[in-house]
Image (tube, rainbow, N blue to C red):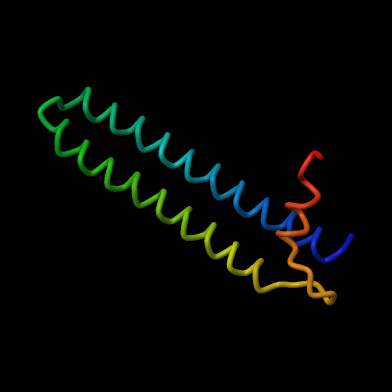
Length: 95
C-alpha cells in the first residue's frame, strides 16, 4: 500500500468515527432532553435552549477535527510530490 492509500484510509476512519461519535452524542442528549421535558414540562424551554447549544458545540468539534484532518492531509505529500487527496479524486471519477 502506498503512502497516499494509507493516509486516505486513516483520514476516512478518523472523519467517519468522529461523525459517528457526534451523532451518538446528539442522540443520547436528545433522549435525555425528552426524558427531562416529560418529567418537568415547565423546564422544557430552558432545557431546549441548552440542548441546542450543546448540539451545536458537538457539531463544531466534529467539523474542527475534520478540518484538522484535511489540513494534515494537504501537508502530507508523497515523495513524488503528488497530493493524496487529488490522486484519490482522480481515481474516484467513474469516467
